[in-house]
Amino acid sequence: KGMEQMKSFVSFSAQIDSSAQDPERICHPGTRQNVLRRMKDWFDDPNSTERIFWVHGPAGAGKSAIAQTIAQSCGRQKAAATFFFFRSDATRNDGNMLFPTLAYQLAFSIPAIKDHIAQSLHERPDLPTKSVETQFEHLIALPFRSLSEAASAQSSPLAPVIIIDGVDECTDEKLQQRFLKIIGNAVKDSSFPFRFLICSRPEAHIEDTFNKFKALILPIDLAKLDDANRDIENYLVEQFSSIASDRGLDPTWPGPAVIQNIIYKSSGNFILASVVIKVVGDEDSMPEDQLAIILNLKPPDRMSPFAVLDELYLEIL
Image 1 (cartoon, one colour):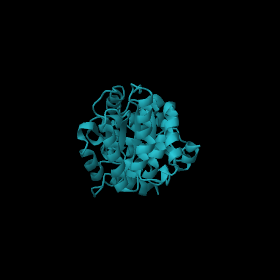
Image 2: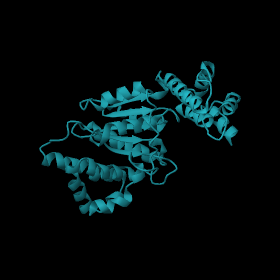
Image 3: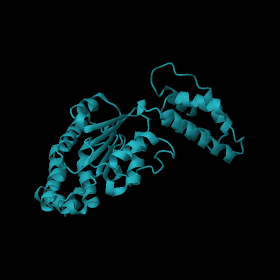
Image 4: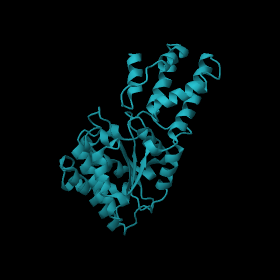
């Protein structure tokens, strides 16, 4: 009964297998090999002293695609629960829904814990309306302490991972800091059974919070990884080749110089490269004409990394 009552506080759209998630928002085959390999090594090492893997980078760097790729490839045994924040969705931008949503998933991915979570809800049916600190303690920490005591600490040797993507898309910055601090304090205890993969922009308040737990965190800065441009090149070559084949163009179209120009304009951001391909591949337009529009955009005269993207959208509109 308790689990049923909690449903109204659970964001089903924030979970990896939700219909709200775009199944195509994953890493293009052959890209992001560096970060995915490091992530897989960490997933496969339950004894790693770094209990939080923090992937950070600017908007458009591919954080959500990386999180979705790893979540899909690992399955529920290794990725026990997920929460994908999204600023414009009221059920996915509220940090108060984070821990009830994670607890609900844990009850199904680790069935032995379900009765312990239900017991917490039976004793305090109003738990999902309480502070995030109270929620975490009674919906996650306490049930797992009860389980480990009952099972003589026979917890999973896998140290399953909880994936939280887009922390900065939670609308309340203070709340972001609070739940990150809760997570940091939880993983300080070596008996806590979970690790966390957290993806966000490198916002100052997030970095400040994580700085308090430096020894426990493995940070990856996507902006500094040297494989972004190579990955974008591989993606563009493959996609342009597909467009050329579908539309009867020369198989070498549009040529390496044009591709390098687009890579330069992308500034390491996959989002711009993917928008270029969507625009050029539009079935209602001529690919050469669409590409010419993109190549003739004025170079940005302001510092925004999305200046080129802004110009592109303005041209489309």
